[in-house]
Image (cartoon, rainbow, N blue to C red):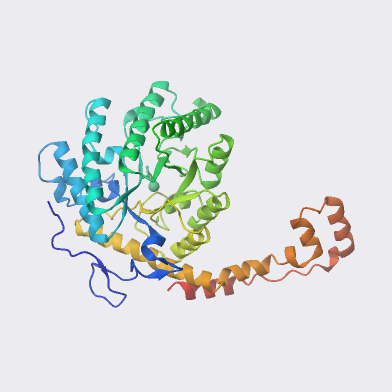
Length: 439
Ligand code: XUL
Ligand code: CO
């Protein structure tokens, strides 16, 4: 089965190329800051948006041409064809990692037992493809937001039976992670939040979520496979208010419930925007807490207030994001997963390749720009100079080394307070020079 025979493997050709199916910036073997681009970027393909998304929107039906979905047979036949198509796309692009929700890869059947059996069969196929291609599982997760039973969440559900069902799904997910050598395991809250406080016990729901996560850690340990657990913050959609609102809220939760040894964050551009943050703000927050785990790469629309999951093409945003990632020393076991979908009007199967090329080129271009910012010390020199008073003055050093008290600082201010001369931030100049780095 091959669905893209007419398209050769995508290669780097540079910005002058007229070939649509070529990289203009992503040159996997090119060294940037001592590592190959491929190692710096760890791109991953998302099973859901790439393979199962059909273009349905609230106003119209499916538009996508997906030959692997049109060849008939059983649901399991279709699921196997989807695996083939997925790995073909990953190979054409030279992408080395992938991610999936359990319900993306296998039909749920009539019962949980059926679902388990279907998952076992399809993951045999995934494992075969992994071994054949060298492509690895960046992360998997459980879809615990589509089925009506999850209307009030999973671990935060008012119904203990639903909590139990979710546990059964994650238990299986961890077993599959072990089978496939998954590096991380993701929890995106989905419907873990509330619609109205009038009928909600927020503290109880958060306690339950923490219990659920501790059980996941305990089970992972018991089967001798401990992936990095990743919480993926999002402020709203589908719930009116989600518990993992943003990076800072998620960190407060992880700290309160003693989960920071096992959990990091998976940060998504569009989710940051929905929370009223820039993407680099979220990455910087996670980095500051030592919890920058992985990235869901996409972008929203400046004019729309919802999760449009577009492929990333905004160079300035992604350059500033890559700068944070480089300051973090990379993503370690994490990667850059394209949680992005082609527009409903980009309905040809080949658009899946073109969209990923656009996203990979944007990240590669951003990597080069961010690396130059680091090499030139452009921003770090500005930041160092801005805080220099904490190094260059006695009062600053006393604050840094912990010897200052309110008494000593007040004594200083009473004597020298009127001598303070502030300097301009010259922020417009900084932004103007930044534009030089958007190569
Ligand atoms: C939803 C979202 C999810 C998670 C995984 O907005 O981003 O696809 O990444 O469940
Ligand atoms: Co996501």
